[in-house]
Amino acid sequence: MDSSFAVVEAMQSVAAASMDGSRLDLVHQGRALLSSATGFNWFLILVAAVASVLVLAGCVYLLVEYQHPEDRNQAWWPKIVVVLSMTLAIWTVLLFPLDVANTQACSQSISPSACTYTLPMHQLWYACFISNLVLVFLIIPFTLFFYEADSDYTFCQKVKGSLMWTAGFLVFIILIIVIMYLLIGYVVYPTQQLTSGVRSMNVLKNLASFNNSACIKPLRSNQSEVSVPDYQCSAFSNTFRASSWKLRVSLPVYIMAIQSVLGWLVFLVFAGVGLVAAPIDWLQEFLGRPKAVITKSEYMRRGQIMAQRAKQIMNMLQLMRRGERDRRWRSNFQKLQREVALLEEDEYQLERVFPQGEDGEVRWVLFMLGFYVLAVMAVVGFCLTCMWIAQIIAYMLPPVPLSPLLNDMFVALDGVFPLFGVLAFAIFCLYLMVAAMKGNFMLGLNFLVIKLYPMRPGATMMSSFLVNTALILLMAPAIVQFCAQAFAVYADGTSIFDVFGNQVMYLIGLKYIYNLNIFLYAMLAISLLTAIFLAFRGKKVWKRRNPLDAYAMID
Image (tube, helix red, strand yellow):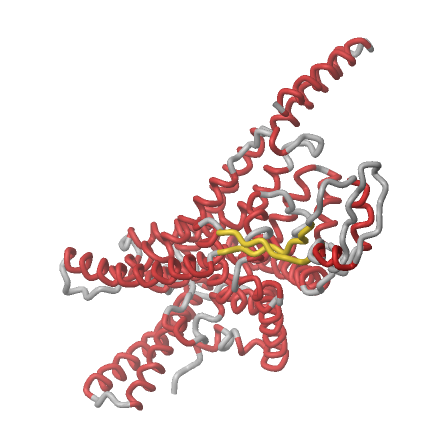
């Protein structure tokens, strides 16, 4: 019905324009009003398709750049899972700017119920979160168990063992989610309850002057107010009282909330480190770039040194096989694993400073251009990190925001051109994902269980890819929830804000974590510790040494 009125209004405005004699303006105005009524935008679909392809291509490049030579031309199923998972994680984050652009497709004068939006965002969000859940807790664990199964097992034995481990893990997760949903799967909204008889609506003007013990006086037939005795007024003592409204939340929304909380536990660590360390690391890589290609004789000399180191590692490994496995043996084995990792990294660096093949010069030029791209990323990263920290401090932490900051900037950019604000919004959301991924890669060799699955360029096994991809995928819902909280003004009215802003924030048990900003304070504390750590320890924290030091002569 509302859409019909919108079209009729458009037709009336077209008729009015024709009476003025401007037939060309008439056609343009009619099309514009009709477009604002439907909200359908083919350009938005085109942008979404192009962005999706670019994200997919970037994930494939990341896989090729980081994969270990032993996994080249094999392990195709884990590679498909890794590329699909990383792509879905980035798509989930970029779906938020797409949700904003989809909401803005309709004019503000048009009722949301009368607008036919370009994309069904509710269905897309549910599809992304369900796919995220299936990948993290089903497909990736099965693939990891299958990939790490004993090589002596047959294919059927690998599948059977992987299914058993995955089923046990999945049953455990489902039981936790279902039990929590049945017990505390409710949202509690604070409400102000009003109890009164039939009365003039003018009394609502003085609503703020009533206290909890006030009562609305009844009326006589002649509509004149009378005084009410205290014993009668006591019956109306609960006329205005604070109350709460408890509702059962839908299971998909509750699953999205659980995903967000689990993702926050990982996100606050990796993003806290990445926001500070990522631009510093990019700048250090640019400053430490090689200045020229080494000669062939120098390449052969360094290759011989690396061969000697590899031989020493093999000798140590043979000695350890014959030794007793005690506490000292474990310590030596960990040192040996680190030496192997350093040798693989040195081999990767050597191949970069001496590109081989007929296209060696082209590869060297592209190699050097990559460092200048890192320099630009470092400058932009420093700016975005400072703006993110300012947004957290000024808008997200205070009970009453000091300033909308970036929300106002996005609105102002939309005033210049409709897509400028959405583009800037997408850049801030995507940078948060990039910083979290960078923090994950940088902490790969330093954090407890994660150190078993390090991410190293040119030397990353598929098991490491699967574990770290699961962590990245787990962080995606937390990043979306974080952006929804940080840009509540700009993202108001979107489909995902209705979930995270109006439901998750009021869930029993979880609302205290968000209302007290526990995650935000923890992330800022980790960022501060990272900055202090880098200031006192410098480059050696993240870079074990200059890559050229790996080629020093061995005595």
